[in-house]
Every structure is written in C-alpha cells, then in structure tokens.
Length: 367
Ligand SMILES: *[C@@H]1O[C@H](CO)[C@@H](O)[C@H](O)[C@H]1NC(C)=O
Ligand SMILES: *[C@@H]1O[C@H](CO)[C@@H](O)[C@H](O)[C@H]1NC(C)=O
Ligand SMILES: *[C@@H]1O[C@H](CO)[C@@H](O)[C@H](O)[C@H]1NC(C)=O
Image (tube, rainbow, N blue to C red; front, side, top):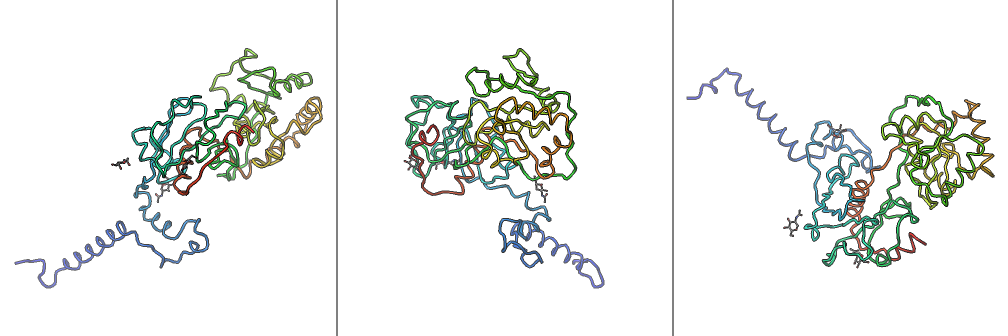
C-alpha cells in the first residue's frame, strides 16, 4: 500500500506544512481579513489616513491585484472641442475608483451622469439627448472658458444638475492648476536668465485690458513679445526653455473674472519665471497661490512704477530670489482639460447620489 505513511518517514510533516501554507495563502487572497489584531492604529482616529488593513494588504501586494469596481457608468456626451481623451485613466491619474467612463451614447440609460461641454452645445440644443432623462441621472455642465469667451444659451438655464468649472463655487471644481505638497526637498534652482520680461500672446485684441496695459508697459521697459501679432512664433518645443529664460513673465488673462486664473500663471510658476499677473484682484490670486509668488499689476499706481520695480529687481538678486521661496514647500500641478473634469464629475456623482438641480445657470455664470 502507501509507502509514504511508513513509520519514520518525514513526508507527512512536509505535506502538513504545504497544506497549512496553501490554506493561509487562499485565506489571505480571497477573504482579505481585516488584520486589526496587528499593532497599527489610526483608522479609528482618522479614517482618511491609510488604515491598518490597507497597509497590511499592501505589504502582501494584494491591494493592487484587486481591480477597482466599475459600478458608475458616466457618459462623456461630447469631447471638449472634439479632442478625444482617455476614458480609462481616472484610477491611475487621480486615484478615483469605481468610474466607468464611456463615450457610447447607447449606454445613455445606464449612465448615472452625463457631461456636456458648453462650447460644443448647439444654440438650438440639436445635439443634446433626445430621450427622456432617467430619474437617477445627473447632467453636468462643463466649461473652462470664462464668461467673456463663452456664449450664453438661454435654454440651458434649468437643464443641469451640476457644474464642473474653474470657479471655487462650482460643484466639481477643476482649476487650471494648483500647488501641491512638494515631493522632494531638494532646493529649487532658479533657471539661467537672459531676458528680463517676456510675453507670449495668442489672442491679440486692441480692446483687451491686457493689450492696453502691455502697450503702456512697453514704453518704460523692453518686453520680449511673441505670437502672431508680433510675427515672432515660438515652436511648441521651445516654449518651456523660453519661459525659463525670462526673469518675469506677463501672465495676463484675456478677460477678468473671479477665479479665472489660467495656465498662463501656472506655467510661469512651474518653469521658474516670476509671474506678473493681470486678472482678478490680488486677494483672489492669494486664495490659490502664496502672495509672495507673484507681482500684481494693481500693486502699482501705473505701468511706469511697475517697470521701475522690475528694473530694481533685475539688479537685486537677493530680493528677486524671494519670489521663489514657495518652491521649498510646493510643486505645481496642471489639470488635465476634459479628462479631469469627467473623472472628478463622475466621482462626485458616485459619492453624492441625492437629488440636485441647478437653476439659473445663466445668472450664476454671466451675471
Ligand atoms: C500599488 O500601485 C501604486 C500605483 O500604481 C504603487 O504606488 C504602490 O506602491 C503599489 N502597491 C503595492 C503594494 O505594490
Ligand atoms: C446597461 O443596462 C442594460 C439594461 O439594464 C444591461 O443589460 C447592461 O448590462 C448595462 N450595461 C452596462 C455596461 O452597464
Ligand atoms: C436633474 O435636473 C433636472 C432639471 O432641473 C431635474 O428635472 C431632475 O429631476 C434632476 N435629477 C436629479 C437626479 O437630481
């Protein structure tokens, strides 16, 4: 009969060990026990910090093998300005789980949320859904353009449930950029400079406040200006090195509205140029970035005094350096137009399942 059971053999012991190890592996992989007996604390005090279970499962590399559950279908009705974006990156880019983004209009009735890009909506609403809205479904109005750059559409007034916008009082807030905790504590080095003041302008209009200010400023200081109006084009690849090589950059917004602070500011910050801003009041900027990180045109009675200040800073290295102290603590993170709106809106819809309507969109946005 079986020789393995003969007395004196080591085999039964070995088989026993294999069985126990096997059982434990299956138990840990499939039952994911809460390892609350481990000496970790914190989950009860602050559920937001990594709980014991997360840490322990992470250590066992189980956490990453469990796929996030895609339970919320979220429909991107139109790609902003027709530019397709990923539908699968909410998890990897924003750590947002449970969202199944789709552009398949056949899933309209499955969708918990549908997002619409304002500038792509026809005035007569011809390209909006024709089918009735399922009772649970929320419609999200998305816009990243300022009111001056988006046309008001009367019929949109009572149509949406949520807003996704750069404004701080939107339901889903997606600013153009933000400062996040610095990832490394190595000292920031100010890039080498060979220009004093620079400006890259795509949209030149003599009536724009920024154009009037520029014309005035250039009477007192040389501004290296680029863009179609100046017949000086810069290649996309040269943009970063150009920005870095300027001591100051004119982060002038095309229109002036609360919270409308665009990549013109965040790119200058990111690329090591000191932004000179024209936009909403200083107080509004300081709700987004530290007061010592920028110069506001309103800090000076006129363009002449601003020019004098820039010339002074050009000669005073120590004072100029002060504009970079925030780099010790923060990094700049630009948002991802379109994709980030969809992911964050889906996350909102997933977490807030209640009834909500947004009336008076037009008054809210266009005043
Ligand atoms: C899980 O994945 C994230 C990002 O993909 C990574 O930072 C983390 O270290 C991974 N955890 C484990 C336990 O492998
Ligand atoms: C959409 O809903 C239909 C009908 O309820 C269902 O059969 C289908 O599996 C759903 N599709 C998705 C992707 O959720
Ligand atoms: C969404 O808004 C519309 C229009 O105001 C409203 O009819 C609908 O009941 C709302 N749905 C939810 C789930 O809040």
